[in-house]
Length: 182
Image 1 (cartoon, one colour):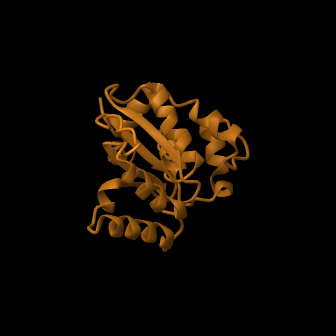
Image 2 (tube, one colour; image 1 turned 90 degrees about the vertical axis):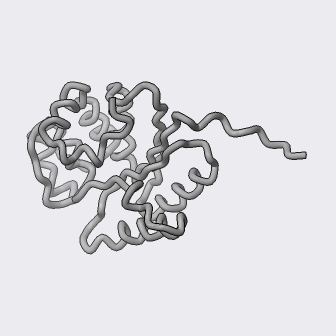
């Protein structure tokens, strides 16, 4: 006789597997701002690296605890070898091409989407050093290098209002950041 509890209803559970702390901070801030439909329970898991995403995704997929599991990550540096490899592993796991439907990405980095909450900006590098002046200009955070304190200072400036304005102004970005829309 099986000694296993049945899965809790997964009907409204959504899991976002985040590449790292920056992605988790951003998604968790959007949750705190209440920008998503309250009928969904959005959860985040920090993969801590793009190289860990596919294993984490497949593990949580097998648990059957989520109605939907998606991935939020950067493309990394050109030629995007790690990003492409991660998508191939997701496709292989499902034995069909679903990676394009579950991988939500930002190029060159998640900081691009975060900064769009404050002004129109197009980052050309994923280097924290290269983007430090832009971060300071838009958020007041000096010498940005993604420490926890700096990340929190930036995401705490995100509000439901500047999120709505960013969505309206930069609608093309919506595919990457907007799940469970109101």
